[in-house]
Amino acid sequence: MADHALTAASPLAGYARTIGDVLLTEVGDYNLCSVAAPLGEDEALVDSFDVPRPATGQSSISTDGATRLLGLQPDQILILFRADDPDRAADQVAAAMKTAAYVTDQSDSWVLLALEGADVCPVLERLCMLDLDDAAFPAGAVSRTVMEHLSVIILRERDNRFLLFNPRSSARSFLHAVETAAETVLLQSNEPVSVRHRRGTS
Image (cartoon, rainbow, N blue to C red):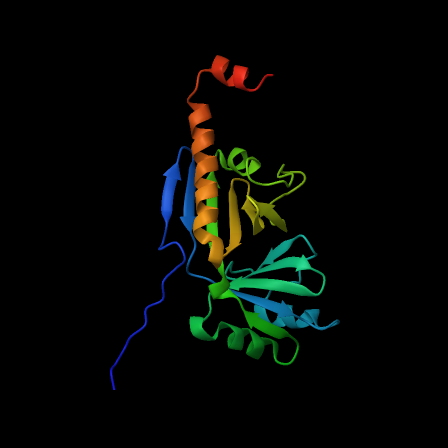
């Protein structure tokens, strides 16, 4: 019998690029599990991961920074973490929570792109309909949205760093949209002020 070895391939092949003042990086060393915990079982999350269940639209992170919970809807959360065995991430979560949750491994279904830098908000303003002002979308905030007609989960880790989750099937199209937005911001930052002003008037 032939001995075939399979090697995991990330959606964007470990992509990393700096465009102007924004660093775009594929984040590949993570696992993502969807968890539906029955009503009244929130304490299992604290006991298992040392993370309180976040309110909808917010995230919470463990004291060691290794696990983050994303509160996307009242009856479901996403757990972003590094599994002991990446091929059995759901088993690890289910075992930790015992019978207190219904777990689905979604690690291979998403591409995770990190955007970081001084111009990250101007770049995202060209793609995202959400108000990303610090007061409206502070560090730890998370939401589902649409960017360039593609479904996206956006998480603000800190002031100038965001994580964008996009389905793996549209990873290349999504990356192209983000690159184009970053390149446009860079181009405009290098134009004379008078030129930028004329383009902004009608």
